[in-house]
Length: 247
Image 1 (cartoon, rainbow, N blue to C red):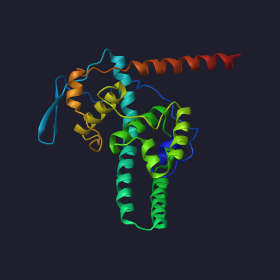
Image 2: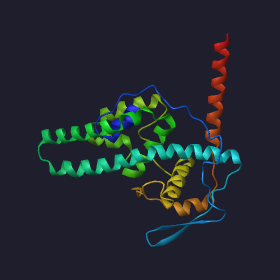
Image 3: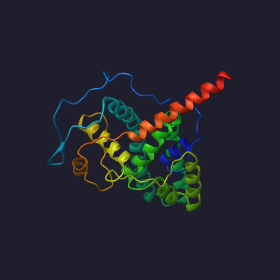
Image 4: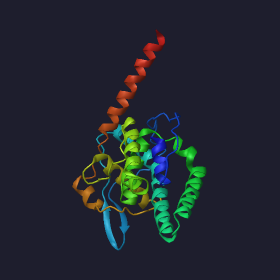
């Protein structure tokens, strides 16, 4: 999957996946995180004021899972920013180049630059980070990774890339809908609060949604049950491996 995501960013081809993956783990201590003081926080968007209510967690354990997921968003977001910027600049530049051969040459130059700068970092991405990245690409560009590849390469290429992605239980056709999908809501919550605190570079979404309205409707409730189940399954598989190794 890492191969697919990387080559999407350069908008032409995908790098080979590395088998090295980070081992997911929850924060052992919450001391390293800075919590907002009780009460609403204030953010300014354009000339309007929006209140972001304090996040509501069911338990302290849920806070740990939320900050685990926040790390995933923080790691994937810069690559989505890069994808949007490179895609915009690539399209603008290509419109000015009449020669087909020169267009291909310029595309290869952009690809080489990204490859040299970001290959090793992309290889270390986990499946969760890859899924978040696919969603963020749709947020930043307004297009799914599949449709972008289809437009730049061919429908046949996009079909095979998506088929490969499915092996990792990921789809390049995945869209971003914070108004209806819980994980997307969590991603947007992480982003908006990070923008407010200057933790991440702000880049507005090319999709249309009203996050202040969405978070108000959800009453800022944070649901991390799917990650609890994921970790439970991981722990179970770990116990199985340990039992086999002792035999």
